[in-house]
Length: 308
Image (cartoon, rainbow, N blue to C red; front, side):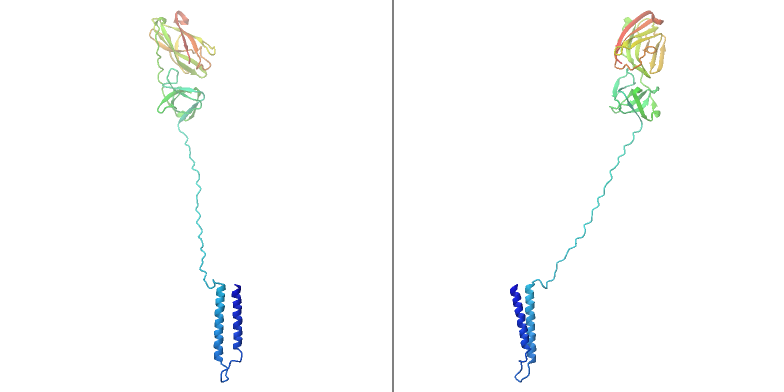
């Protein structure tokens, strides 16, 4: 780079000196007239040569001079922002079940045909379990419900421990199956047979239902039921000159006597009923029938034990 600068300085000095020489008044023709045309031509040639050398020198110093900058700046178009909507969570509404339902505060059997212990147990409704109610009995103390454990199955549930929700007033009234006649082996020597059927309730009072049939030739006119709850020691003492049936709090058929072949349901009610629920306790009793009122005349007795 320094050599090029020295060369350039030398050329410039040479040109200046040449031009100075051309301007001197020494140049004349043979006739004594100055050669103006030759002097001008020489100056032009020298100036042209100097310009050419200057241009070449500058070109050598800056090889990129004169080139057109063809570079272009590409403007990137802004990328469109993608809008992602935030979806609100879908609220699933839980429909309120229609109909009438019940829950029980104590495990309760659900039976086929009726709620009493003489009917077959189909299921046990657990505490707090919700069961759909289809109908009720006329006394409005038992309910015909859908079996919670088996589809297309129904059963009767005693309502003592039940709490209803829904349209209880709109329930239809259904009739229970007749109380099944228990199977038993007659004992002719006693003149009658007796068997346990089930437990009846009326409010807070409980009584067991017995089935008595006259299998002899005597006419029975009075009855005695004595014994106890072997768990609580509650004493049972019931006597009557009639044979009266009960369903819950409602009295049923009353018979003055039992003639040969006749039968009746009897209960330890007025007197003799329990003031608590004896379910699960062993009951030991003796049933006595007599041919006259007041437990007089000929009497026969049969012992009986069962667990409600």
